[in-house]
Amino acid sequence: MTKIIRALAATAAAGLLLAGGQVTATAATTTAPTPAVAGGRAETPAGAARFELPRPTGAFAVGRDTLHLVDTARKDPWVPAVDRELLVSLYYPAVRGTGHPAPYTTVAEARALLTDRGELGRHATPEQVAAVRTHAREEALPRVGGGRYPLVVLSPGFTLPRSSLTVLAEDLTSRGYVVAALDHAYESDGTVFPGGRMLDCKACEQVFPDRSLHRVSEARARDVTFLLDRLTGDRPAWRHSRLIDARHIGMAGHSIGGASAATAMAADPRVAAGVNMDGTFFAPLPETGLGGRPFLLLGGDPALTPPEIEDTSWADAWPRMDGWKRWLTVTGMGHPGFTDWPVLADAAGAPHPETPLSGDRSQRITRAYTGDFFDRHLKGLPAPRLDGPTAADPEVVFRRG
Image (cartoon, rainbow, N blue to C red; front, side):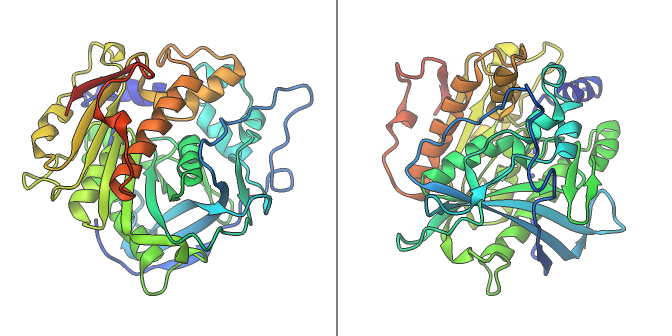
């Protein structure tokens, strides 16, 4: 996260946080196998510790597919010579005991990730990060017979890959959701696309110099509309699309991915509820609001924001959120705390002063409040945790709403 913090501060951008937009299109679609790393999985070096993600809290086992989507009707905003591509991890409730363990990431992707993760990169090897034990299983049989499941789209922070939200994706799935975690082409430090192509952050080279981060927001919103068309249209791209309840769709994200949730909602009425985890609204919300749809602002500790950074985008957006809304912050939670990063840092014994709250506690709060929000607004279930402060979560501060 250090690269983005320095870049944003240097350009006087609006904070450690980031955003998303819309467009309907046709597509070419392929299913992307997980790139081979030591026979499909990364091997942990002899004598090295094996990291494991927190176990999901819900009742369902977790299956995972990988889908490669190509929007043949839209050129990539960062590399206009090629069509826009997405790489999607699709998590779904599965039959327990079927399939085989899903890898966390590839060694090449882990190496790219660690170049921008400060202390973690000095305490963990790419092989260790790639070999992190997940709780999802590839080729798992889908759980059928219990009806369809709401869909939640997850969008990661700028420079981060979709794997950075694996803990949240697995937990939501275990609670009875289909989850689509996105890699937006040319917006991460490094993501391996089909054909062994390592796509790095071409967007970084363009938006930091001229402070045009709103372009990221607009591109991601179009990505979301395209994704929904391909998952829920007449000829769906995913083999398990019948699991999705297209009437109940939400979106959450970290940093610019969280802000993208609001931009996508403004552009596409199918997105019924949104969560922004610590993301600046570089693309302002429309004056007409979000059509009465609910929105959760889940932010880090204001005391941990560098003094040279001032962000008023949440206060500016608040009056335009015209449905159910809450503005919460988490004491001791820094900007990376909503991702897997502090979990991995704790496992590796790496300090993380940017987000002093432990990885375990950070993820317990992130999963609980995000999951309860979608339970309330996509499933109609009670979620008393969102009604006000609770002694069980003393770190969570209700700022507004």
